Image (cartoon, rainbow, N blue to C red; front, side, top):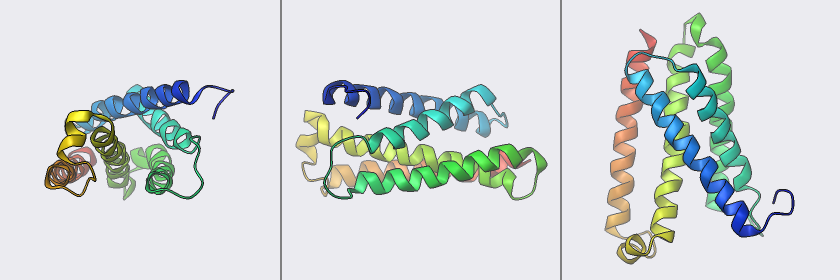
Length: 160
């Protein structure tokens, strides 16, 4: 953990950073859907999402967890996004790699948000306590379908 913070404080910081990443990511993706690149929002999205993944490794653990695997995948995607962002204006494959990477990075954050919501919010936890129940599966399927649409639409619209 950072700077001797309590676990509670560290958790709150991690959650705030995650929510900043999700909200700014939505602004970026909706911008791409409207053929706009919002540079300031994109910077906030990319770096808050990097911080989300990095701070996820600061919690105590004794073995590699699924959340760590998502964090590793997210960091790899974000490296590609950072490179693609600097090259997207040149055209070629970078013009579709950049929006696809942004949507994928945002999806991974939202995927974890859904998982955490079903674990921490009592009403949702009652519906799917083991996260293998139908309500959890349906929500994750709906989120996945929405993000597939975001990916396809943003790649088509941003590239032109």
